[in-house]
Image 1 (tube, protein in one colour):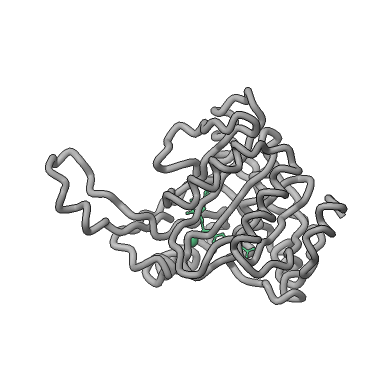
Image 2 (image 1 turned 60 degrees about the vertical axis):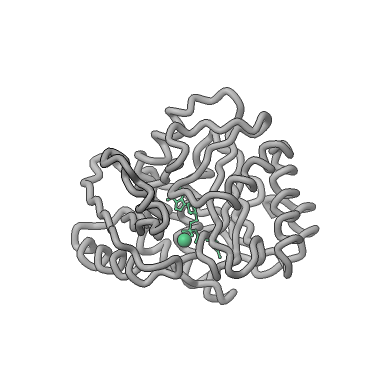
Length: 272
Ligand code: WAQ
Ligand code: MG
């Protein structure tokens, strides 16, 4: 599902009929479901688009496709939350985690600049050393799709997240997405910041550190947000985009979920 709203100020400035009025991204969601679940999921997605903290959508596009390829089954990343109280500190935590994973300062700065400036519907793909953007459609970004979770894994995940008071759809969906992204061998790490104005928690994810939640990665009220996937230099971008957008991947196994820990604890014990 993707939901958007026309940008008022820009609609009036559109002169040519060929130009589409600018659309502001409101909400998006995707998943792999059984036939019998489709009606309920579509209803849920529509409700989400019409009652969204970013505003009410005036256009909702829903695409339903039969997935023929047998899904690849993966494990979820382990989950941990870093103790953190200010966005300044949150940004530094993200930066240090990324740098320790081998991402250059240049690439990290590029990602932060993008995330705080624009609101893309998808994610940017940035090379880990030179900080070069690779995704073909820059305004849209790459949208990770065809992701799901088995019923038994979802039950186990809910139970584990509940123990730490974080069993929400936002966390579940972000973890499923991050687990698919990090299962792509060309991706080294991901940086994510929600675009919802009141959701300040973001994360850095990688195979080494797992899914590391940062409670204050941005300030309350900010509409900026986005995702960046850092990839190895010299990879074939077509392969990465095809995997992220088209290969069906389902989380079938859950790893450990920890509560809140100090930042130095994770730096000294990646994988844990
Ligand atoms: N593929 C690629 N990029 C996406 C996708 C996707 N399927 N969905 C969202 N994005 C990008 C897009 O640029 C959005 O503007 C941005 O990410 C943020 O999306 O552990 O809510 O759905 O507490 O607002 C993370 C922390 C929350 C959860 C992430 O993202 C936690 C979140 P949102
Ligand atoms: Mg959002």
